[in-house]
Length: 287
Length: 289
Image 1 (cartoon, chains in turn green, cyan):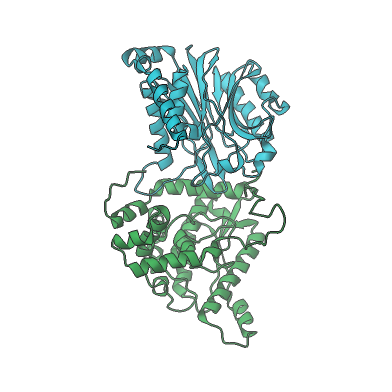
Image 2: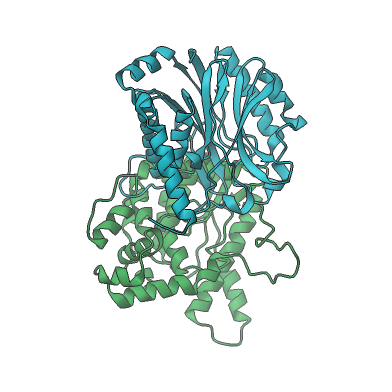
């Protein structure tokens, strides 16, 4: 790690977020190969939206397991941007991975039509994300594969994802990479330009944009999160360092309020040895 | 010391599967024998894996446990330094490094500094050792230290003061720090600096063996190395990959460097021990500096 000689807080954050892409690629490719093989699998399924997170995950999985062992699953809904599907197909072709397209419109609409109350965009978005999760896990059984997840560190910390939806996976290679680091690694892996350049969107409804919805850019969010999380700065220190105090407070509030999304469901303790509290065995037990 | 050919066994232990890992030890020891080595060195907790949590109670064994006898048997052909969790007679669990030689355990070092911060939680499950001692072998005086022990320079200084010509550092060092435009992991950079510093300033051979593989998403980066008393890296294992790396540690290199740089001769142990004793006494009396 090169020493951080930047003096301004912003300079320190930008320096700290600069990724050694070759090293990160090496670790993540080995991680995927290890995590899949130690549970006696050889294959992976990645729900591939055409966005940069799933594209990077798919590319890393293809390097780790060989393209024949990766299924890029495309799960469009009738309102999905057709360009997303095109980007996902371009990516799959470039990587040489297996592909499958399953339109989830009927499954989603079939459920929504059963409801009496008019649903909100957020509820409909969650239903879509969770329907895609069902399809992804079902196809992982058919493909004899584990589900490789696509949630990055920024999304996870902000809680900007659907619990048991897009957040669901067996193995997550990019969960310790901030969004701007995902972009650096994706560029280093020469992913298609259309994927690298388009504005980030969950594409759950037409015209949706992550940054409009969040109210700030990923660049700013990553710098603030990096200073809060990785550098242990207080919100006051970050604000004094030149970041908007309200924005810092909002980001910090989001991290705190969504902590439950990053933890397994809470278990009421009764016995002397409760799962994950004082029954503490590693996931890789015996492997 | 006598000229020493050392094998660095950079393995990937299976977490909580001592029987599997024991077989790996015997296989690497056999390869080291065939390469004409005098000693083979394994990483920290090489028999058990590292992030054990409650598995500690399952894998800990007394140092005279029958399960270790295959290693003792193999040590008739080559000295074997390995890591395990020792269950003491009063049922504490202590991370330990053992040197098997000639069919018996020559020395056991119990990890002095447990690491309980950041991603580490050792003191939750383990008890610390209380001694740093060098020990005599057929090839000279050696010492073993375990990972966090070496993040306290006093441990290495004690081993050297006690006469170790070779210090074996056994690690399970997780790779972390890929930001900041780095060209190498932050943890790797620190270890390489430490190994070189100790070898040069304590004028001894530094043999650092780190493991590879992943446990629950944490990578161990390998990069095991031997550093000569003059600071030269004599051998380095690849990052992230299992390897058996061999290096020759000649006495002449040690002799010549101690002639050039008689730092050990000049070390003022009387002063150091007096001042440490004073500071320790003042801390006991509640005086903090």
